[in-house]
Length: 187
Image 1 (tube, helix red, strand yellow):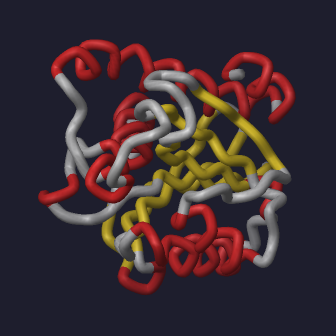
Image 2 (cartoon, rainbow, N blue to C red):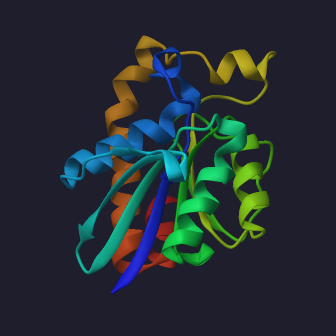
């Protein structure tokens, strides 16, 4: 049975809930709920972990409890422990370079301007993992930090359930039919 690691990036704590930067946490929470998986804190892995089977795959979900810029510490810790190759890792992350609601699934690509992805790539010493980027707004904002730590507007909140559902479907396709099919669906 193949083993997969799915990581939702975000910042821990109530202060960051429902912010643009935490869309990865929101999606992985919804995915866990749909598949009846429950998160438990694992200090050893610096994160919240949920494990189970989905179809024919053993799946581990991770929400790092490090802050975004140190996410790689948690990812590499659990990946090494479970002996999961980068090609079996999917990281879900916000992307200010994509318009609100657009999804982009890639593998073997760079981290761009995202410090969470830079941390993951550095810790894994590889870019051969999949990343599901979720568009959270238009490029060109004045203060990027303030923007990604802001909450969605009421208009954006209305479309979030649809965006999250498409992301979950993308993850399920990735698990069941592989990266190429998932990319065809998401992109």
